[in-house]
Image (cartoon, rainbow, N blue to C red; front, top):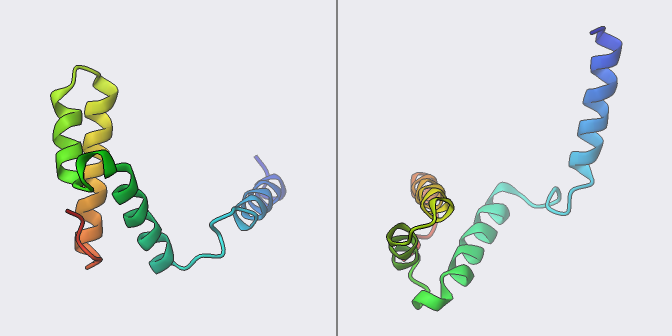
Length: 87
Protein backbone atom coordinates (compact mmCIF):
# COMPACT_ATOMS: atom_id res chain seq x y z
CA UNK A 1 0.00 0.00 0.00
CA UNK A 2 1.44 3.36 -0.93
CA UNK A 3 1.82 6.22 1.50
CA UNK A 4 -0.64 8.26 -0.56
CA UNK A 5 -3.37 5.65 -0.05
CA UNK A 6 -2.56 5.39 3.64
CA UNK A 7 -2.70 9.18 4.01
CA UNK A 8 -6.08 9.30 2.29
CA UNK A 9 -7.46 6.60 4.57
CA UNK A 10 -6.11 8.34 7.66
CA UNK A 11 -7.73 11.62 6.61
CA UNK A 12 -11.07 9.83 6.19
CA UNK A 13 -10.77 8.28 9.65
CA UNK A 14 -9.82 11.61 11.21
CA UNK A 15 -12.75 13.30 9.51
CA UNK A 16 -15.16 10.66 10.82
CA UNK A 17 -13.74 11.01 14.32
CA UNK A 18 -14.14 14.78 14.25
CA UNK A 19 -17.79 14.36 13.23
CA UNK A 20 -18.56 12.11 16.19
CA UNK A 21 -21.25 13.33 18.57
CA UNK A 22 -18.81 13.00 21.46
CA UNK A 23 -15.73 14.49 19.79
CA UNK A 24 -16.30 17.94 21.31
CA UNK A 25 -16.19 16.62 24.89
CA UNK A 26 -13.07 16.69 27.02
CA UNK A 27 -11.74 13.51 28.60
CA UNK A 28 -13.14 14.60 31.96
CA UNK A 29 -16.57 15.17 30.42
CA UNK A 30 -16.48 11.76 28.74
CA UNK A 31 -15.49 10.10 32.00
CA UNK A 32 -18.30 11.87 33.86
CA UNK A 33 -20.74 10.77 31.17
CA UNK A 34 -19.60 7.15 31.57
CA UNK A 35 -20.18 7.32 35.33
CA UNK A 36 -23.62 8.86 34.80
CA UNK A 37 -24.58 6.19 32.25
CA UNK A 38 -23.48 3.34 34.51
CA UNK A 39 -25.47 4.81 37.37
CA UNK A 40 -28.58 5.05 35.19
CA UNK A 41 -28.11 1.48 33.93
CA UNK A 42 -27.86 0.29 37.55
CA UNK A 43 -31.09 2.03 38.63
CA UNK A 44 -33.01 -1.28 38.84
CA UNK A 45 -30.41 -2.29 41.44
CA UNK A 46 -30.86 0.86 43.49
CA UNK A 47 -28.04 2.54 41.58
CA UNK A 48 -25.60 -0.07 42.89
CA UNK A 49 -23.30 -1.02 39.99
CA UNK A 50 -21.71 -3.81 42.06
CA UNK A 51 -25.12 -5.43 42.62
CA UNK A 52 -25.80 -5.21 38.89
CA UNK A 53 -22.49 -6.92 38.12
CA UNK A 54 -23.17 -9.70 40.65
CA UNK A 55 -26.60 -10.28 39.12
CA UNK A 56 -25.09 -10.47 35.63
CA UNK A 57 -22.47 -12.98 36.83
CA UNK A 58 -25.18 -15.09 38.51
CA UNK A 59 -27.09 -15.47 35.24
CA UNK A 60 -26.59 -18.15 32.62
CA UNK A 61 -25.93 -15.91 29.60
CA UNK A 62 -22.23 -15.81 28.62
CA UNK A 63 -22.77 -12.35 27.13
CA UNK A 64 -23.85 -11.09 30.57
CA UNK A 65 -20.73 -12.60 32.13
CA UNK A 66 -18.56 -10.88 29.52
CA UNK A 67 -20.32 -7.54 29.99
CA UNK A 68 -19.92 -7.81 33.76
CA UNK A 69 -16.18 -8.26 33.28
CA UNK A 70 -16.01 -5.26 30.98
CA UNK A 71 -17.88 -3.09 33.47
CA UNK A 72 -15.54 -4.22 36.25
CA UNK A 73 -12.51 -3.27 34.14
CA UNK A 74 -14.09 0.11 33.37
CA UNK A 75 -14.72 0.72 37.07
CA UNK A 76 -11.13 -0.20 37.83
CA UNK A 77 -9.89 2.24 35.19
CA UNK A 78 -12.13 4.98 36.57
CA UNK A 79 -10.74 4.39 40.07
CA UNK A 80 -7.19 4.62 38.73
CA UNK A 81 -8.04 7.98 37.18
CA UNK A 82 -9.36 9.19 40.57
CA UNK A 83 -12.87 9.79 39.35
CA UNK A 84 -15.87 9.81 41.66
CA UNK A 85 -16.40 6.23 42.85
CA UNK A 86 -19.35 4.19 41.72
CA UNK A 87 -21.32 2.23 44.28
